[in-house]
Length: 102
Image 1 (cartoon, helix red, strand yellow):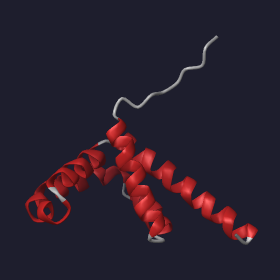
Image 2 (cartoon, rainbow, N blue to C red; image 1 turned 180 degrees about the horizontal axis):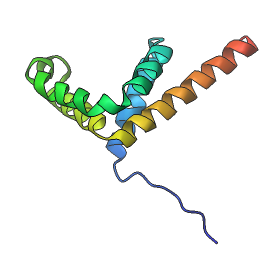
Image 3 (spheres, rainbow, N blue to C red; image 1 turned 180 degrees about the vertical axis):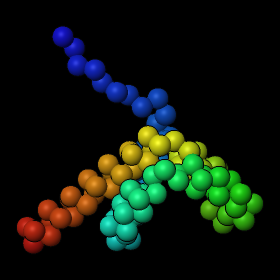
Image 4 (cartoon, one colour; image 1 turned 120 degrees about the horizontal axis):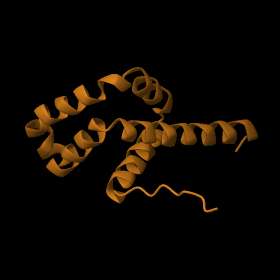
């Protein structure tokens, strides 16, 4: 019997999740980000709509493509779950390095 392998059909989404998780971890915002994402999961769609509304303001700052990509990311509940898993893996890694004294 073969194992089922889930392949993400959108590697750009995976890269966006990786970049966002790395940025959050680098700035030491793991705990607040996980808390906010967990507590606001049902409102992810509303957050995406807010990004669509402020796109004209944020577009020149971070790029219109980035705003669109993050809005699409928030629209998809599975993307939020993937981001949470990635953040928790960063958090587990930082906990392990802190306990070993590295």
